[in-house]
Length: 58
Image (cartoon, rainbow, N blue to C red; front, side, top):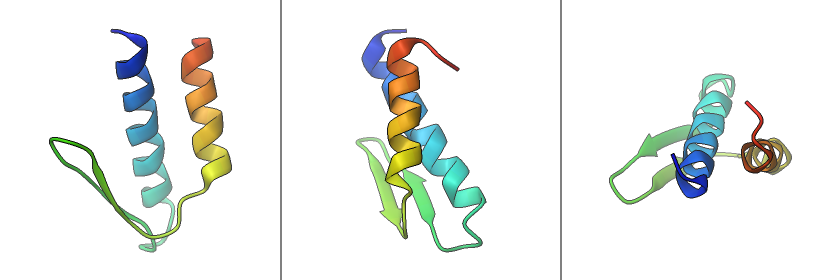
């Protein structure tokens, strides 16, 4: 897996996790070309996940 794919998976995974704990306020739908979002996203958490994926973290 290359770095871009790792970052892509980390972003989508984090967005889906945020949607799961959002009590229905965030909806995430993955498409062939991207992601459709409807609702609030915690950017600080998303940034931490991206930084972790770049650094090789979980």
